[in-house]
Length: 367
Image (cartoon, rainbow, N blue to C red; front, side):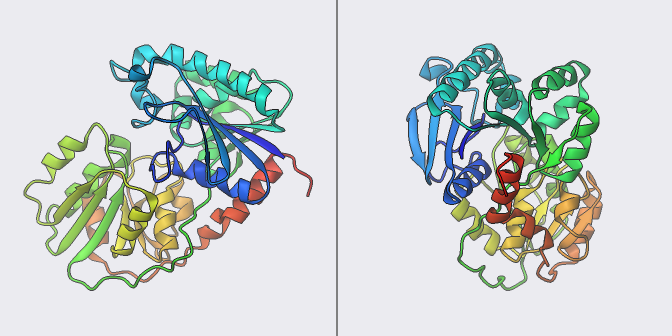
């Protein structure tokens, strides 16, 4: 079977932390014997074609190289809201649609699998012939709360033989908005074969938070939660428009707070191993892959009771769930550390082999 993935975010090189979950999915499919191609935006200094972990990656141009600044900097939607990014949206969408058609003629896929209904679904909808599948990842589901965008999404998803979401709560929300069935197609969690290291001694208690510095990720909430907690060290990994404000917010905290830029997965897993727990303070979360990666490394998770996190983290078994936007509740949960290792029952459905099998069913492959 030949599959063409349409993605607006995909690693630009080995070790690039952008869109790694899509590379993990495509590589798992390639390992299972599928012929896998990916079409993604070009970026300055990136090859137009490359092979990554057995996956053929094609890049489309949408502007002169020095102006290709819309993708890979926090997501297309975030980039579209910036003064520099907004004028690039029309040429980006037009280029994506044309490149998807050209790539489909070249590759002749059995399945066109678009990620995010906007822009991936929009680019793939005009392609006729292959089986058309769309996966929703979270930010695109939030767009469905807008009436005009909801109407557009219904037209974009109409040709799809299957629309999926990465968690059941996300699928339920999308189904209600789109007026059609939305199934669950989870993303793989691959943390390698090296067993997790023993937890470090304490005190201090070491915490890790990973996410973009944007409001929905709740980085400000965890900073407020640890502001009065001595004997705590917090590592925060990520970039984004609110980074400077968060660094200022951390000044004077009783906890030791360190900020890190996005890092390759190997380095991130090493940081997870050095922590006693991973904190996911999101105000909105479609899935919560970092929570799953933490559990795969035998680290408990303190997370908010929102979206896909409620499906991933079993309260009192894998860690603790707290209300969103509540620094006091989060601080109370942190004071309960250290916690036992998580059971991690949700990991079974996210194993690469299980994810590939689920996607083959979605693609209509014979049993």
